[in-house]
Image (cartoon, rainbow, N blue to C red; front, side, top):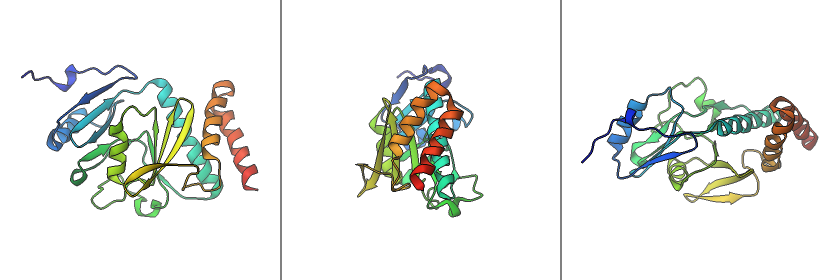
Length: 214
């Protein structure tokens, strides 16, 4: 058997590393060794660990989608708590992950002022966002942790999923923002940002939302 140190492993941007048959204890040890200050993202479910290294394009897209969510919440007068790419894990569900972005909306009051998450007592995020989903490991981990709404942006399209009876099902509309064409708003903002820049794209998106709400 060959034993490697984590520092010997290098994951290029846009690529992923899969480790199979990994115990929860070893997963937890890897998390501790990786630390909090890193660019990589992890997803773990029932013995499979995925370590992903995002590209600059990925980071730009996930930030902009998060900005659109904040814009929608602001225009609707809804409160939220944003936990970004916090590590969420539950040993009893044998799952852990780090979303690209996540929000507490319905459960925002319960999470106000918290700086540590313990899913044994805290609820999972109400909404999580993933850009360029690479494997089933991520999706199954989200389902196991009970994240009720998942947005996946890939190949220029936003797909919205709701957790129903333990499985994600494709939805036409976002439960968090009923009545708004969220997928179209997000896709348009991302496309426009390439032409007119992030700031103007978000201003235009805000005007679209206000027009829809009047």
